[in-house]
Length: 101
Image (cartoon, rainbow, N blue to C red):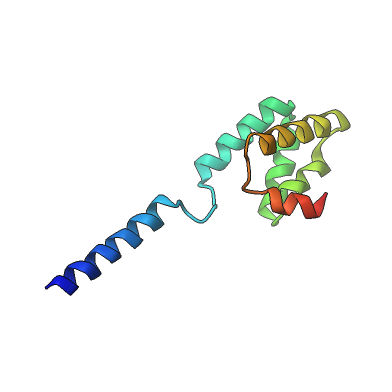
C-alpha cells in the first residue's frame, strides 16, 4: 500500500509539472494573434506586412525572417525591442541569437 501511494504521488507530481511547464514553447493561436497585434502596433506594420509575416510563418519562417518584411526604421525598432527583452531577462531565445548575430 505504501509503495502504491509513493508511485501515485510521483505520477501526480510529474503530471502536474508537465502541465505547469506549458506546452513546449508552442503558442496557441490566441497567443500568436496577441503577439502579432502588439508587433503591428509597436512597429507600425501595414496590413500587407502583417499578411506577409503570417505567410512567412506558415511557410516555416522563424522570428528572424520578419526582417524581410520590415523597413529600415522598423528593423531598428525591432532590434531595440529585442535587446530590451534580452536585458530584462528574456532568456528563452538568447542562445540562438548569440550564434545567429
